[in-house]
Length: 321
Ligand code: DGJ
Image (cartoon, rainbow, N blue to C red; front, side, top):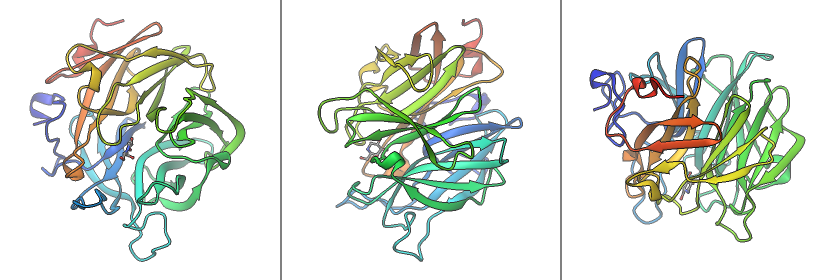
């Protein structure tokens, strides 16, 4: 089990400080004032054996000082069971929540992928809170700059500018839109990357981070819940130009990203060059038992490397460039 001796155990059940399995899938981590906050999809419940749908529960929040022991802070953004027209009604789809802090407005800003069960709604929802643990107030959804938005992430750059990266045009392109200064809308600054000629052959599960003067993008291919090979790219700025580099994974299991799909890359502020790659190992028949795979990601110049570990702690980064 995770936490014994303070180690990550990728793929094993990860329990919170109350002993319950953590429910924070497709998630991301925000570091704020010395505490880490992990936001993700709460997938408690039964996966419909016919449709594969799991009723929306809401966005969970957990807090931690050491990234291993996580306290359940409850639902930061709950589902809206009383309003069938609401994006967060249990009958809908709500995935990949990400939160950033806006120092100008002193608000925590959450974006997530909201969709219909057939994934044709393809919108991005926004919510705000004065506290990292919520409750977040839902502000409705948009088609960013008028485009479809499915898998997405937020990236807050070192200059304070924030960006929405989203799979668009039936997962044939990643669009990148700079957010307005309050982080609540997309601005008219936007571009695209990694265009593929056909539907569902582009990139999903975008994760973006900066290391020094380089930005990195990591994404999966488009095979639903089934794992595939991750691919990464490097650019001088979030808006590109992006140079595709290949898979960051090496060793056994590299071709399926170790049976998982990246969701977020967390650079550790205290350790330059040290990044935790957060991934999901989905269980489509029982989504609530999907597992977390967190692995050390090494940055050396333009090159990213990640390999499997049965267990590890932050000393994995000791002595690395
Ligand atoms: C792949 C996406 O990355 C997931 O977030 C989820 O939407 C599945 N597709 C659903 O099949």
